[in-house]
Image (cartoon, rainbow, N blue to C red; front, side, top):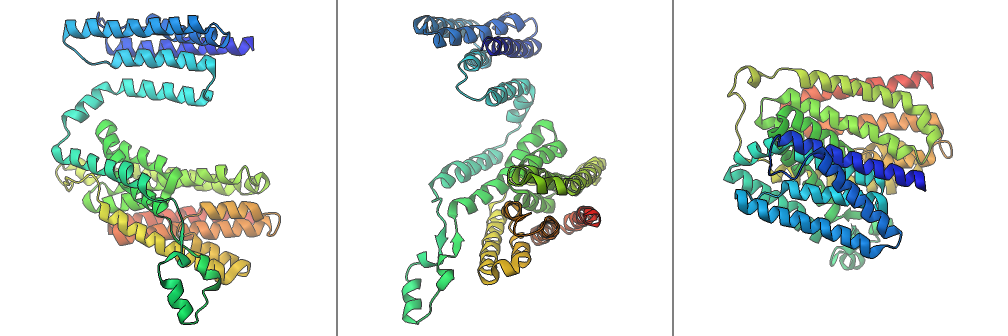
Length: 439
């Protein structure tokens, strides 16, 4: 207990010192700044001491110390802002958050990993001051309207949509009509047709990749921005990420960079297999690890090769097609419609074929994604099916999934993007199948 307390105290001081170092490096010699390494270290330590007092039943002293700190910060802000006529409060807010981090570390009311993540995010926000200043200064009215539109899509529409899977029997009047025609739906009566919130989440994700990729592009450059955004989006839906990048390839000459970002999104989905399969069937995961690692390694090399290529527009400025739209809603809606059709067909095949058509139904299901299939394979491998059969099914569904992404790219992307992504997919598929020779 004492050692854990000591570690948390030390960690709070280190966090405070890091924030102070960042503040001091941003505002060197600024007499109006709250302080630097020593000040922020003491602020974090004060938060930690408040936590120690609280857990030892000295609640009044803890509240007194915390109240004294907040009064000091508020008073400082009032005096400095009216003296300098600068009403920004970044330093004051960072001081308050630093105090709270020290307090939370001791109280242990949220996991340590989350606390550290908050600290890292704080440092990131503070460190991009110059970039955000440039970003805001260059925002046009049309760009602002795009951000507002995305906020409506993600924060207004999404929460009000029902998170319910509507079935065939839920369609108004249809059951009565079929009964009147002496048609028995049987198993199909429980067929899931659509979950409005999950489908709209796909729309939010596709348009969100464009929005956040644009923002990161303004901060760190288009090349790095879309690569980073796509990699993170790949953990949620590599299909949606690939679709979004394919759509963007019609309006830019940076096709190589977009292909590289799409491959990165799929690399992230390969890494996700460890998280899906590991807890369910570690023995099967161990048997397929070499194949997954080869896929990750191959995808990494391909992505690197595409991302490092110099685009035509880099050599001759002005060739890039200008567009005032940050994202387009219609292609995202079209893709969501395709996804609905694929999922319905998949579920029909599962009802018709059952276990006897396991591979067929799994391959068809891979058009919508492989996460659910990997969970299913992990449950069955070593029990109802052999490890080798499960691995063969994995190779087939992964190949089909990559080909389906190529098809989506062809439907809504440029020809150049589709061809390059197809060649990348074929390389990854070929490498993944090599391990079959050793099982």
